[in-house]
Length: 198
Image 1 (cartoon, rainbow, N blue to C red):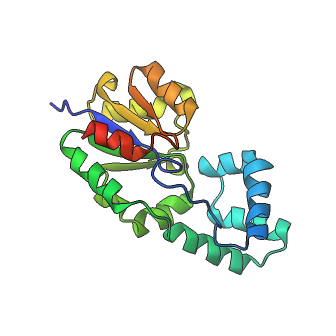
Image 2: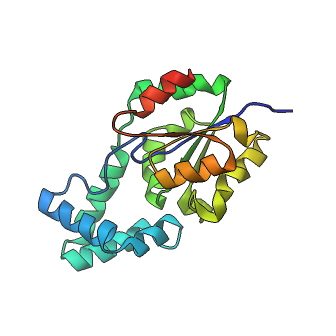
């Protein structure tokens, strides 16, 4: 019977800080960030829950901002595929697999699973990758249902499991379940906590 705990690791603002469409000219990039991530959070949340595809969202943005769809899509895909995580971080996570089941648990879009995950070979470093787009759930939904799903799957005790995430809400949800949560900040990055766990 397994007794190894789980190490849950977030993606955006924990492993990687790069945004979508980052290589657009700065004026266009600002417009698209404003349109989607400030003025249309419902659309983005629905996208992260699997209700829209990346193509849908790029079409909406192209129409609203009068940018050719083909150009926007090309930039979007390229930026998804060229996101970076320091290899030293990935190697440390890989080394921790003898102590933990490692799960990359991300609130993300279909583009993560389709483009970023394979381009960065993330399957080589994690035992499992869970994306809210495929789950239809965010980490905070139903008081942390996703965390309990995976502790049951791996027969792990939540009290022994560890979370590394930049979201205060997710941090609080995991803490309430009884897990060990560490909040990623600019001062205390993932590297800081990975060293503590090694």
